[in-house]
Length: 366
Image (cartoon, rainbow, N blue to C red; front, side, top):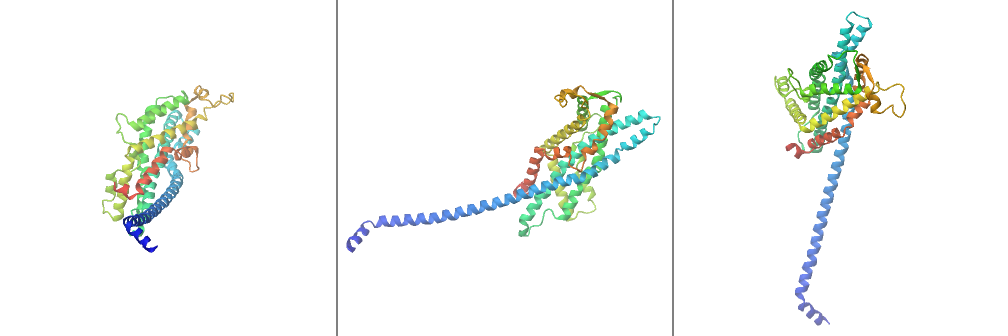
């Protein structure tokens, strides 16, 4: 029995060796495959956790953006009202002065200027804060992810504060220049229209389009500037302000400002701002439409566009309505105007792209 078994093994020795090698190879290959699968699973889990953490941080950052916008609207509103003070003119009109018509003309220009400037500046504030806070948010996520490696933070608190203070340009010199340009455009379009002339909502929309064209495309005798010029000081101004000596904090801040300018000069930014402005002026006209509605109409037709197109109001009656719109546009209490802007899909997508770019090291290196 043993001899026959031994003879069988000798005869099939090569087969058994091959089978052993094959089985051993399969075993080792299986072990290697298990190890690689485990590594892939662990890497995918780590990537999923990182992505979930990044998504949570991004969504939290967007809520911060919205709250920051609302907190800054009163400051913006007061700055506009301070420079375009229509209340003093209405007080004068109550005293029945001899130059009543002249005061009414001034009130016409100031009322339209401040409401239109409010639409522009609110849209700019919403978009600019989204850009700045998502750049900072991306860097903060990056700093928190690599801080254990001893890497120098790219956005320490003092740099954040100095960088975010650049928003004061929009609330200061940029806003003043914007109001000057808007006022000149309003004067060109509405200056020759009589206070007694009746206008429909459609007429008002046409006049707004003309004013927007002058502000955004420029006109003879006035240097055309892109809208982003009102949002941030130019690079030369920034460097001049730091000419007394640049600290490490200043260098980091200037880097952030230059990156922000790159974003503001991109075609995507222009598309997003144009979309927000269109939404803002559309909401402004919707607010105005409430005052053009007839008092007595069949309920089936009271809200149709055709019913509003035939209604006209004297310009003198439209002026007080326009004058009061700034309190709805620049309202710290979430109004339809601000909510419409915050919910613009293009703005949300743009914000996500900015955050994504600045929260990935390889994207920054590009």
